[in-house]
Length: 90
Image 1: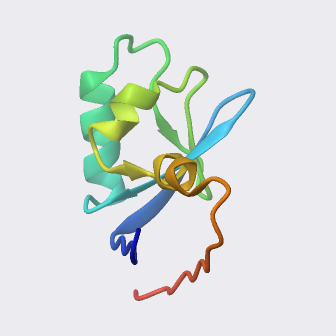
Image 2 (image 1 turned 90 degrees about the vertical axis):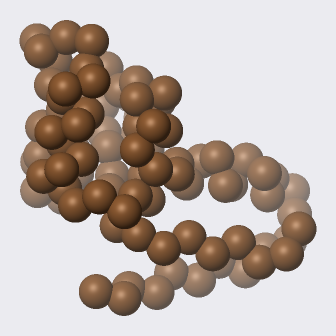
C-alpha cells in the first residue's frame, strides 16, 4: 500500500460510549442538515457542540454516506509501520 492522502474538513462525532472522526468535502451546516434529514428519528438529532457533533446514538452507516471515517483507514493499516502527518490547510 502506497501513500494515502485524504483532504477535506475533519469533524468529530461523539456519543455516550465512543467517538468517530469523519473527513468530508461538506461544511458543517450542510453536513448537519443532510445527516438530520437522513436520520431515522428527530428525537435524537445530530447537534453541533462547538468542538464536536453530538448524537446519543451514532449511526456509522449514516456517517459513511457523507465522507471517509478515519477508523476505516486505520483498520486497513493495523499492524503496519506507518507515518501519519496531519496538515491544517485552512
